[in-house]
Image (tube, rainbow, N blue to C red; front, top):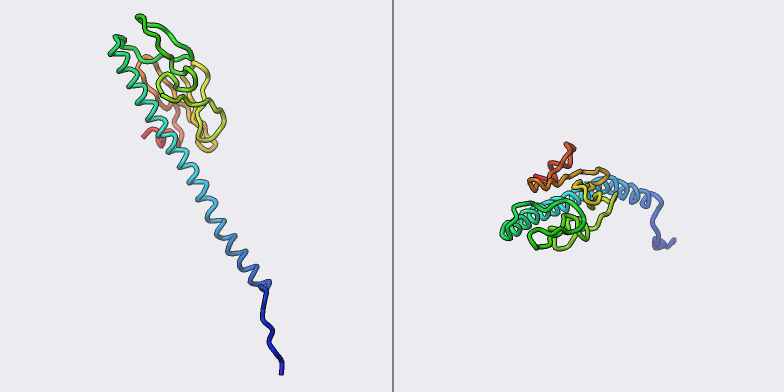
Amino acid sequence: MRLCRNRLAFTMIEIVFVIVILGILAAVAIPKFAATRTDAQIAKGRADISSIRSAIVSERQTRIIRGSSSYIPNGTDTYTYDGTTYKKMDKDGLFGGVLMYPMSNESGKAGKWSATAGSGTYVFKVADTDVTFTYTPADGKFLCTQTDAYCPELTN
């Protein structure tokens, strides 16, 4: 009479089968993960744009109360009007003239803002695409200036 031995290991076929299943799951999950990351960058950009636009309007209202009907000018320093010192748009960091906490200028990083100092042109990077915005001090508008796929997603 022969005794059966207990099986203590996986067979090669079982291991290959598990690896194939993991490969299929990875092939499905990785593109979904990349899309989720882009969606998160778009959501962050939309929130930033809303904050910037609201802050520009709030700053304008403060100026009107103080007797100046102008919007905040471009630039990185301050100016004086009627005895009151005002910040310019990019004082102490991007949008530091209107936001309580300025943003850092991080060129080339996805989900981050960058700008040329005092130019009024700002770039938000989504995935590998630069989306350009322009601030116009004459009318206080902060608008996307290109017609790519991300512009409507960020501004609507």
